[in-house]
Length: 391
Image (cartoon, rainbow, N blue to C red; front, side, top):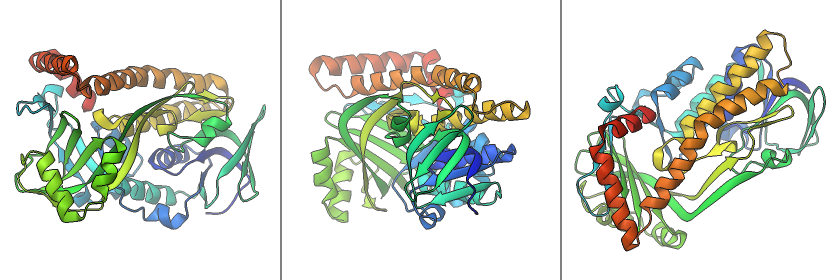
């Protein structure tokens, strides 16, 4: 991948959203440069980070179109058939079935590191994509006809369109003067794989307990990814446990519903912060992925919304390119912004509402949680709507 000072598009951030966008735009004939502070070796072989991504049917289709899905090993893909939502100590969940959404399964689970590796391989096959690794964008100067991006290694790039795909704490978003609403949930989540004795049936769990929130993501065999949400100091105490003690603690927290558990991977901790940018586009500038919308993981929408932003932005940019129009013109970018906001804002607000409601452990809060889940369980149209959104 050779260096070029001028490109049609510069993307800051080589996560899945940035890589997929580069692949989509390159397939449409545009030249793309990706700026990434990590070395290429880390991008080519990303380490396991504990995160299992729930992919919808729409997301799988997009990954197939980009040639990414075909590069993921079959053994790394797990079926996600249905989902159960538990409240408190109840063993009677609200069942969200794929059949209610008109499908055989809700989706698929794939490790984040495997998606990143496959996306990197897909990008590496394109001669019109260059990757400037081990450097970062430090200043941005939008102009009438191009934007100048200065890198930490002293190089300068000129581009017709700059795209930020550099996480929910995006430095590029800030550099362009775009603020964001941030909701710090005051908790951290620990993720890791556990083996267990009782078959999960490829059913995901979301368990709003009292004093904790648990999620179970079914993997192949008698293995699952466990997600535990607690105040950070409690997470730190669990992180300090040895593998055997941690497995015993998780067996207890899951109330032995899957039998005895044993540790099957490293554990990873992430802060829970929701982010929603006030704008998704500016002069010759756009946000995609978590830089635009960083979701709480409870509804598993985050990665899928990131891919939708890739599809929506690439559609507008490639339409402009086919018409020999300016791909950085605000009229095209505003269309992307309107479409993505229309799709994401209701989900962002409703997700935050669900988290707030179902983590309220006060006596009135518990009553409201129970009543809400009872009503939702008996409302078939509601469950069909939820299933359709998940698939």
